[in-house]
Length: 148
Image (cartoon, rainbow, N blue to C red):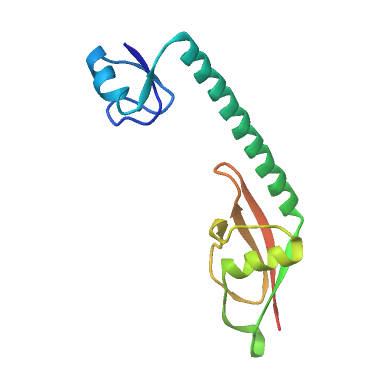
């Protein structure tokens, strides 16, 4: 019997795959636990429509992330930090502070978990910070660190 998987089944396959299984296994395990549907013509057409819709949504998300990355290229934010003599900074700049300043200065919501700071920012100057916008897209934001 051919079955369309609704969830990942460890030894069988991933969600959305059409697999061939024994009739008893299909009736007693897969169909009973709602892990899959019988692969009828209607169900196969529904699967194709769902896959096309998922591809369209994924493409739109990728394009949106690319647009945001392009927008971030020429923008920068300024972060003020307490500093002593000769530009010695007390503490360091965190991703939380960068996200907060981006919200204030650029009016952009950036998740602090998606901000990647290569090395700790512990001195005054300008730094490029990477922001993971999508699994395939990384934007770069310039961060200027100045003394209060």
